[in-house]
Image 1 (tube, rainbow, N blue to C red):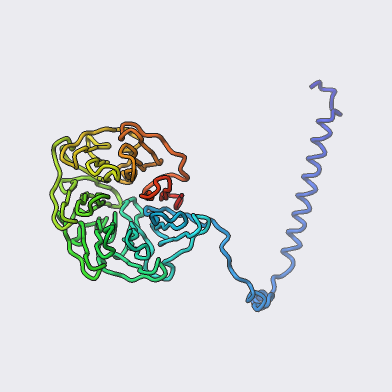
Image 2: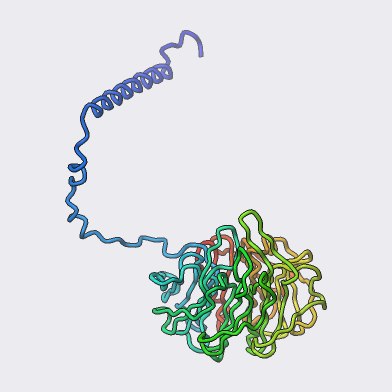
Length: 394
């Protein structure tokens, strides 16, 4: 710009803007003095300025979101396309009967807050078992006080024991008998305790037997049936300790176990291709298409996805994809497809699926992040509910 262009449109605009700013500032200052000069009304007058009766007709209503909060547990009813449940780690149990369009809280007004696992009895969908206390031991982990049961689809609940288990990793119900239940209890996250390991009831929770236990510093993190034979059960023990300044995952107590009598007695699986040395968190699943096909996600120095094709006798590592093993102590969940032996789902920061027996995985467009729990309808594997940091997605 030349020095003589003092009357350019740009200069005139800037001078106008500056003048306007001065006027607004002066006006604001004047209003401030005026407000300061007016004394505040007495406290009694301020509180009675609005008649409280005017508010009596007001009612609160929920405007959403209708699902949310970090969740580890999810389940559905085989053959029912509309009914699903999920459990939030600090928000109780929720139910939908319209395929996820709306959700109803089932445990408000009960002691159930932190949900680590839930299971619906395949032989009677009105019977629901909930294991309280999440077993994904992050720094702000919440805890529960044992197992609860509903016999009316979640309308009412009763506490059925295992008060000191604190964190529960899995609950499964015998497909033919709603009274036979197995619970994988991690126990106290911040210190040792005795009420941990795998527990079994054969009378609907009136009494419990500790059927698999290592020591006061080792809990159970997973348990699952062979879909074709409920006498065959797999379970994983996990030695871990959460401290405010440190987290330790793995130890001599961790291991993979197998039962052939419905969970009454157990044999540890080791060698034959399973990783040697200290093990951490383990999740296990049996293919619904082939009982001989077992998958295990194992945290260890040689960790990753392991597979057996002979019912758990021999194993081989089929995948060490870092996307599946990051923060293994926090994720590691896997679930085999009910009808296809080579199809498997794995959960980590994303939800993944393999269709080649675990050799490769594709990332699925699941909502939210940090995925922890999945249920697949055994009658229709296209129907899935999955739990994550965003609640539940169907």
